[in-house]
Length: 218
Length: 291
Image 1 (cartoon, rainbow over the protein chains, first blue to last red):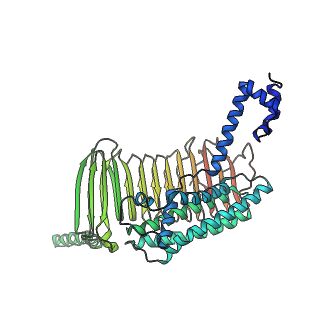
Image 2 (image 1 turned 135 degrees about the vertical axis):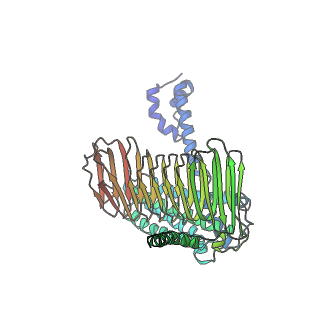
Image 3 (image 1 turned 90 degrees about the vertical axis):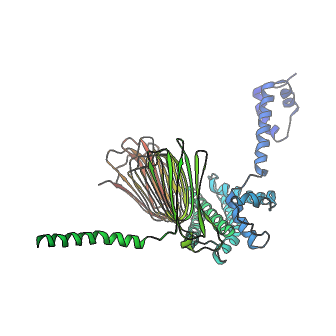
């Protein structure tokens, strides 16, 4: 027989979800289908939220491309013969889940940094920490691809295209530096973070294009 | 005597007319290979074009047919034109590893049905599209893109190429890094334009319920309006200026200005039927009354 009512059970709900289950609350859940349903729903939400923290989400293709440039430069993979869909062939070469995890971390950090709400001092400090981690990681990941793009002789037959890509890479780099400075000064400024996010996307796209040209030669 | 003078005048005129034509012929690249193909298609045919270097000129006509005329130099590239069902694929295929840029060049003139859908990839050169009413996707690196009298959903992405759209009526999404945009006489309900260092000029109509988002990093954003236009404006330049000539009614719910210490303009012009969002990092935003 239940010793408490539904309205009283609400007081036990928070400790319940933390694992502290009062005998009266347990008895009520056993006998009350409505509260049992509520607890089940909350369990599902809690489990899903945990999964979000560990799931490996497919990274965008452009990140694979920039990573490919880095691995090629380090001699860990070789250029494959030109093919219409290089991505399909390349996926077979790399230990994809490991790399996906690494890139997921970056994406999550950037995603948090770019879109996370900033309303308190704690959030501000947290955002700055995440911004620092994510930008440092991203720049480290970009570095070999950038080096490859700017120092090694390109195989693209069209110098106009290569010059345009390199020139615009310089523009985006400058843009990123100024946006980072701005977001560090005003982390609560959503527009500044949006500009920074756009700049990273543009850089990844450009590196992907440079890499694709280096790999395909056309 | 009179007849001799007339003859001389005619001769002079003819020479004057011929001279530019001779110069044009001399200035045009001499192509060694020409391909002309015709494909009969059903309504809403899809035409894909992949060209590393050269001009791509697409015009609509009233026939249910795609006509391709492609010119290229030498034997180091070939132009492939194939039909697969209701899709026509055009591709400049590089046959050798090291090819000089001029040898890579191919110029296309393509006539398509008005309702055709286009997917164009042209790295350098230029892309020109006229009177096509179907959806279009254009991607370039350095090539400029000019679209006139379009009505479909238009997406354009360039790295350094400029973009000009005149009398376009469909949804428009355009992005670039250093390309300049000119959006002229537009009648579109949805415009999204983003460039980093390029300028953006919007001289079109703000349609009721339309959304117009223009964004750059530096450079100038200029929007022109008429006294009869009706829009809700949100213009912010993070580190630059906003010069606004529209007499705006302040928003009913004033927003907290955290996004800019420098330039901003918020408010409603007339009934605020369209939504206009302009954002720049350190560029100048001008909202000008149309002359």
